[in-house]
Length: 358
Image (tube, rainbow, N blue to C red):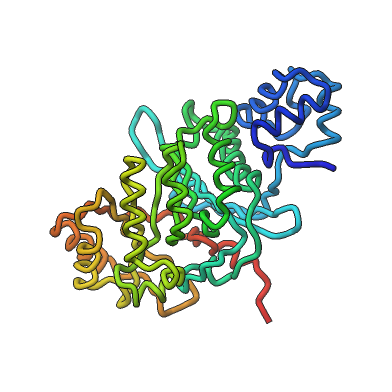
């Protein structure tokens, strides 16, 4: 029975190679072709014996995803909808940020970890799709490899164009798919895999405490971002329903513990909705909640979704909210929106291709 190679960890790849009667060092060669040379077929692996490649072809497939639709924004953001093995779909995005004359851009990939999402946030397109299933490690990894190949293959690509950061902020709740998430992180970090620094990866969560505590004890120091959106339990219960199970008085101590154990500050994501969570008073409540923490607030200009109760705050309100936090001494920035002309927000592309529910 065939398996997807990117679904295997390093130990499993080693075991596979030895089971095929090959010397153990072939595993490292195979991994280099997949994760560093970004091969899409076994035929490209010219330094591997033909007999080995033939045996591999009978046992493995290289990649799990098929690009089904692509949209490119004016700012260069690329959003891709992928088809999965059983016909489901999932999306990911490549975002580029201008840097300086020595390197034209920095590139960040926003990954999905689930098909749909079980959290059900009313302002999120993915949250309104319901939950289908978890992604496998390979389905998570292959989103990165697809965009890495894209950067490598661009005819106008300049030397040094590569993926600089990975954020697990796409479809799904990453910490609800912890085993697959962590296997993907380890392979993307490994020198024998993709080789990206753990500090260049950020996991975003709606606030699953068991996962946050588990993440605090991992050896790899990935970043942690909390989708906060309100500093008041009553409102956050509506915006982020998991808050009913893990309220703020439990979430904030877990975030402090994460910093104490890892030395990495937590980011709080705060999407601003007009007349919902963007008032002067709510900025003060937020400041009171996180005062004294080693943290950072990312204010987000919300995306337009079908639920008209959650319209994006106007720019003047966003700037006033930001200024209020700064006046109190809270470290905060306004995240630059990317890909708005192609509806690049989480789940928006997939929503356009889903069949209407009866």
